[in-house]
Length: 72
Image 1 (cartoon, rainbow, N blue to C red):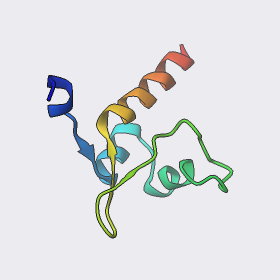
Image 2: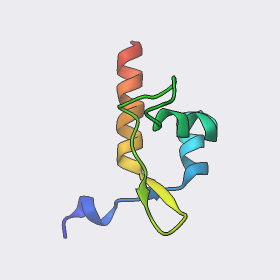
Image 3: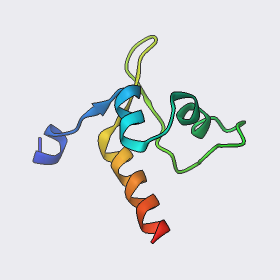
Image 4: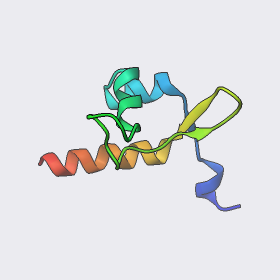
């Protein structure tokens, strides 16, 4: 296993909220194709269990970086 895979982290919803500065409902709207706030670039969560989901930290960081680069 390479160095990068051994350092992957999964973020839960509260951690994602803190990182992206969006509310829980807005995050779920961003991944809902039927929502007017849908963002096809927003990372999709991975299923962790019957009722638990999480986001790869790397994908959240990439989304944030795209936003920052797009606003400059």
